[in-house]
Image (cartoon, rainbow, N blue to C red; front, side):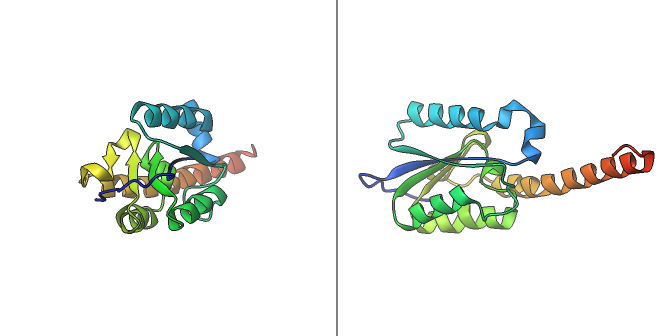
Length: 161
């Protein structure tokens, strides 16, 4: 948990990410939808200086994402008060790395972390289900890849590539 002492001029980082696999889930995870959800939440809850960091078409399994890295650099420079995502899977799908950022990196830098749809807010204390959500988010791309591979295998056997 972080006390999050806001300093004048700090930004609220609104992070959105969409991978190729996420497009299969439909419009609910689209960048347009994520931006609308993040903007509304920031405005409704009094978060100032909102700045978007968007990685479109980049898997959440990797943390080498251009705008994620830009956001991390801003945090390291002390320019970010709060990071807000639509849900935890937008931050990433590697539960160990997500855990590192949410439990260590943000805390050490006094950055508040909010995952709107998951009810996670570091200023309100620990959420006992957060590690399980991270584990589930890590599991999803592996399951999708397996399912996709099996589907393509069936198509190959039928000659329908």
